[in-house]
Length: 369
Image 1 (cartoon, rainbow, N blue to C red):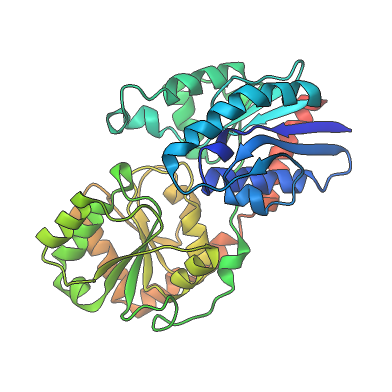
Image 2: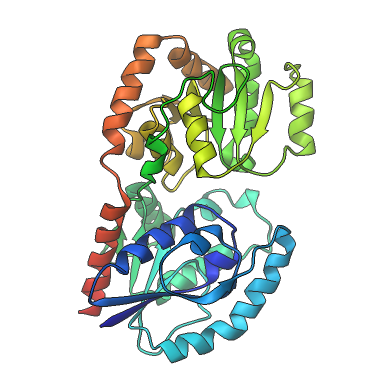
């Protein structure tokens, strides 16, 4: 029996998020194989996905709500985890992020590159941010590099000159739980008015500021719809100042938080998901929205057209007028909206965590054999 280890990195970096969900989905499916012994080695963590996972774990869940304390978890893991890895004697280590501090003796190494944001948008990050340096080192030490889209794989080869034979593309999946709600805009998310939905973090390349301007630039959109941002941090002072300066109605731009069940209701109730990110390594919210019957309006950049194909309305995320026009083309044309919903339901069927896991396991098997 081969032991497959997953390290602590992402689980002591985020409470929840796409990368930690991805690792848990892969590890849980590895656990179903009779010839493999998967284990997550995270001595202390505060990740909700791992806490809910059934995969075997060496570690303990200690939830925190103050992000600054996360450095204590990382420091503790950096000291303790190498000893656990040495005792575990894994045959393969799948690193969950880019630190190379742990390498079990003789183990094959896999690392997933989720995007090339730090290399494409260096101006958005502190000069002290070491992500790019660590990424280069992790890629150099890895026996195989996984990318979650062809777009990311092309960027990786172009920017870091990684040989193609070292790269495998394993496109991500999504939770089918988002397909369950069948709700109307009136009751889908407890909203008072019809609404447009934005999901995730909002700052920098996520481009929420331009969506705000596009929303405010359309008298029809601002009159007929609210704009609901699901997830992410509370509105910053700059965001609140922008909302005020754009003279938007009180409470027309609102923040909603919650678990996946709440997000599922938001998708089902929204007039559309608007996803203006300038760059994404994949874009799971597109699939979640499609499965819930929510039409997708998104950027025409990076991996998003690869994921959505003809199941989305596209705009240029750098152009406020393009965003406005793209949103209006969908929300005021019922026939076009219905067509996007139908194409979206068909498109999301091409993706699943089972498929992602099998493509990942093919790489594991090649290295282990």
